[in-house]
Image (tube, rainbow, N blue to C red; front, side, top):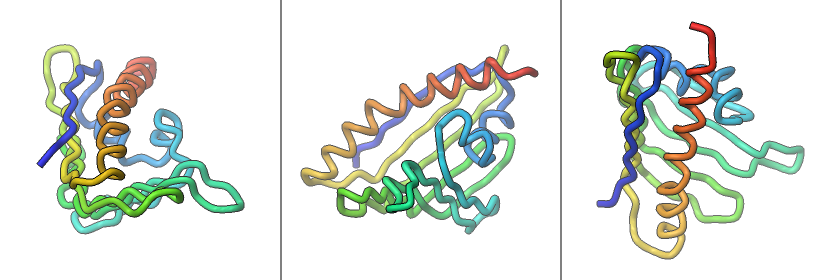
Length: 147
């Protein structure tokens, strides 16, 4: 099964990297998440929404937290991508792992579970292009924050 995985060095501690994926205010600041609902526990919900208007929501990523270690890892399973203009896509798995190293953390992000078909092809290629760019934005954001 296909996957998208990215590694990036970020000059911050592993807990700071994981917090950037779990703290609603940080998610809003670095990823422009407009609404979120996150239950930080195994079995908890993880839901992010973008392009929120009075008419509806542009797209949502939602899943169940399968593993949460605040200083090392966040794994979201049963991940669905919901876009107002596309069929629901899922289930997938998103893994965010931060490992401490000299001068910061190595962030490893892997999204997997892509199926076949025209819409899946579109989504896979979109994610393949987006994650490296998104993580460069996260790196810039975290490294610019006061220690």
